[in-house]
Image (cartoon, rainbow, N blue to C red):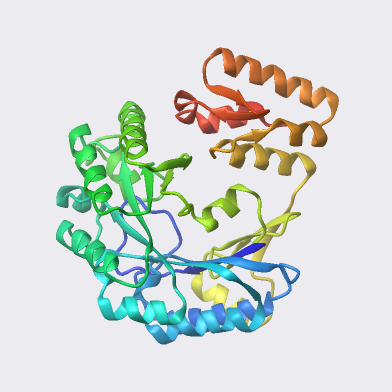
Length: 375
């Protein structure tokens, strides 16, 4: 199995916290979409004829595309790759784009999962983030989605920022849970360099983030959602039974995937590639059959470290049996020594020869992973 990710690098408005590649000018949209279709054809052999079990249209804001534009991309994929009969086909959408007729068109095009970028049900939070929708549109979008033929729905929420107190975070969680949404992603806000939010905090126009707020609100999300029947299958993701995202799990399981579009990433098991983060240059390179990406060949240590990083984030955890086979005796001894220390500090548990993060450990996942990496 393998996956395909399509990056649509256009947004109507720039969110203050976002550092993904996008443009708010649609002037070159047709050229980019043409290049995306061409790149799909150029890269048809990248996954060695693997069966595709997930396609994900992300961005940017893919929901700004019309039916013909979406269909064109999906038809090109269908003509160049083998698709699973159980294909998960996700489209990221903003609440203001959700209309009954659009959902019917998406369903006709094969979209069977929608990931809705709500982020908050409070207008003051949405203004802080510079989101284009308001709380009324967010609630209406969910209601329209729930009445559509697309039943596999994810809602994104953001926590850990100064405006959001704990009681307001609880209300956001209860608001989305009452709609019986099958999948909820909860992301702790981070301040990325070169974003407006980074500039506002630096200039003291906004309060800095308090890590303790994020830690407490993470625990609140776990308590509320687990008690409502969601499985916490990855640090940022909660799902009802059988609604875990195939797309997400492919990333964490080191499954091969092809990234299409400006800034998209690809992974073939041996190397990683990053497409150019410039729409015009990307289009020119594709049109002229020139290399349009940077490539990094992965060493054995690279691959083991990525396995540690991604597996540790999931509810399955790290397999000690797998690492015993892949590591040298000295490497495995050092790894076990680190594990024992983490266990003493109550950051991990051992279960069925797997290493799992405790709730306390989940709050320190990145630093724990780096301590376990092979040098």
